[in-house]
Length: 211
Image 1: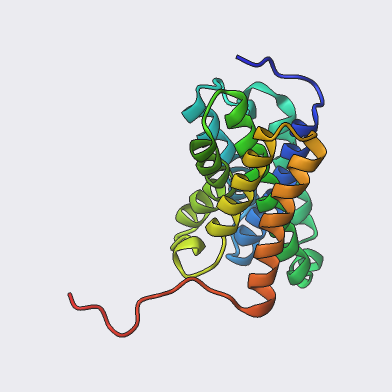
Image 2: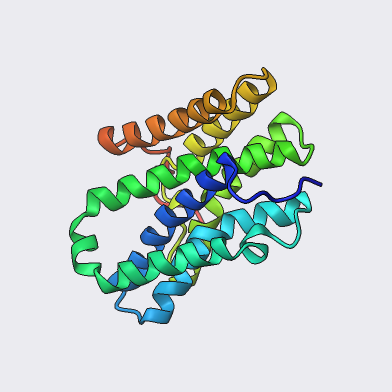
């Protein structure tokens, strides 16, 4: 089993993605007029939930979020900053959405590559990359009493899966880490931003359901 290192490129990307996601998660609590504890919880689960699911599934236990103090500190700082300056953060709606897209792109790459490190094949690793990207947001939405956004036609999981798959395939081609990470990141981020700008959505059922 790979031993954790202090500041590998993968760890740096992971922590950056956690911060972006935690800001978006804490902002959900603020907009629902919840307290500081709720902001920290929703920020924490958004930032850490997907990675913890991944680590448990690949046998990387205890999960990095529990074994490394940095993984706990980053979402706490993000939650506190968002709660304290929520007025300014809330007005930067497009910036927060951009942060979320960056977090998704970072997480799908780091999740997939960590799964590869633990011996998974290309498709399972790509699926775990997707789970790393969307898992925290799903937990956040359930805790906040909402249907997870990925089930409402938002193109979110698909770009994450595509980015993760590109990263895995580039890694199997023995390309440098920078090329692997950039390729997967750009694929996910580009698709997600195009979906936001052009209003692309996944198909939804037409007409009333027959129940």
